[in-house]
Image (cartoon, rainbow, N blue to C red):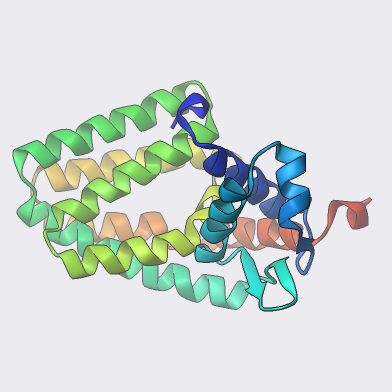
Length: 227
């Protein structure tokens, strides 16, 4: 999603999200809507919409009569959520391999090519958005509205952490290779292979687990404390 096409709320949300996952805003830090509006030169409405999106993804909490705060993130809960996400994505992939239409396959191919274009120029932000489109095509192609709804809802909560993963060295290019394997499996109708490829793509394990934990711990430590 090119920056020029993003709304004020989306740009504000992205900026706050980036600050939080990179430790520039510490867990427990208060976010004052009026200050944010002045800082980003936007009205109250984009600030409110941005905060609502951050609440939905679990990065921010709103406490009645106290205010809005950067959420305190638990690594154990994140890992459990990724385990469930991997199962949901795998199921979507298995059903998509069996049910995808030619039109939907074309849309998935186009989404994959947009991911390739972003990776080619090393644009992790653009890849992040195009990656969302790639996965959403698979949810749609599962032709199971309940499953797709559950997958989208959990993905919304995990979006900032999936974005964080892309900052790990070589992760974007590895992700693209995994997308190719997923697309190939769905295109040829290999349901078990599509399910496994998608599950492995999402699940945090091995070295990726260590890298992710390290990234989240940096996220939880304010930059001013890291020297």
